[in-house]
Image 1 (cartoon, rainbow, N blue to C red):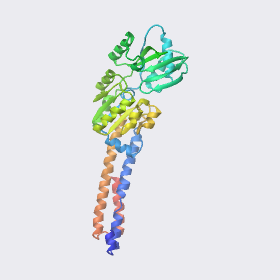
Image 2: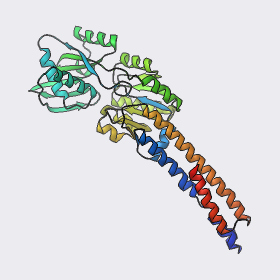
Image 3: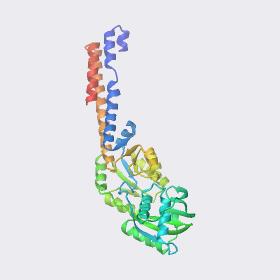
Image 4: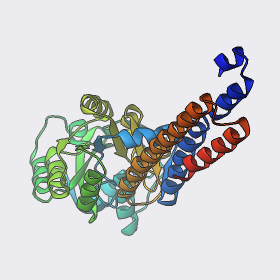
Length: 361
């Protein structure tokens, strides 16, 4: 166009400039992305921006937390085991549940529900703080109370009651929460959290939309995690991991492709932030998890993520198709204009037609 303008042919120059606009690129791609974001929202998936939708389409490795994602997230206490008879069951449960009142974890909610269901009186805890990845500690009625993982509560010790808890948990896949009172191991809760009935179908759906590898990353014991993985069809298991170790697993998996991390608890927040795409379950997760995540599922169905991935693939495909067709037609029109067969007025109309076609595709 500049060449014809310099050579004294302003009509051709104007015609070339008219049809050389990047409107298909500026219009078609954003419209496809915005449409994808809207469709995800209608499916109960809040995607925080077009760049996130594009990264979601590129995801190849999916990592899950277990509780609340592959399981129903509604655990119930099925047994209480005491270390000895120095403490009554009612006092043991009341102290543990009192401390758990301030915890957002689903296991804490189950213990509080168990205590209230039996009419036990609960007190408001003091000086509470969480040891990330291990448990919770504080003071209840002047007594020091700790709840969490076995290695944090009992260490390497293995008295008879601990062996009993572990045998029972290994037998039926129960979850365990150990309790220490006044710095002495006092007992444990056994809880059950059934696998989501739609979890196996969800995994198959995810594979159909381009996920090549699935990994279960959890703080639970290996035998529990592996039993869940076998049922739902997970490729690999990384069990008994604290938040820092979850990040390390994710970074190792990232060598094989773009990663998507799904979680619903505070312990998952670092891994969600480290993944290419972090997905939080807002219906069960803590606010910190939702704020860290790139995508928030507002429905209690993890298979909504498969729908979002499918939409992301379709949006990217339509955007590329629209840009390719629109810019291709513009290039053809530029050649025609350069040869002098396209007057400026017709060129302007032609460009508008091309823009409409690019958007409509």
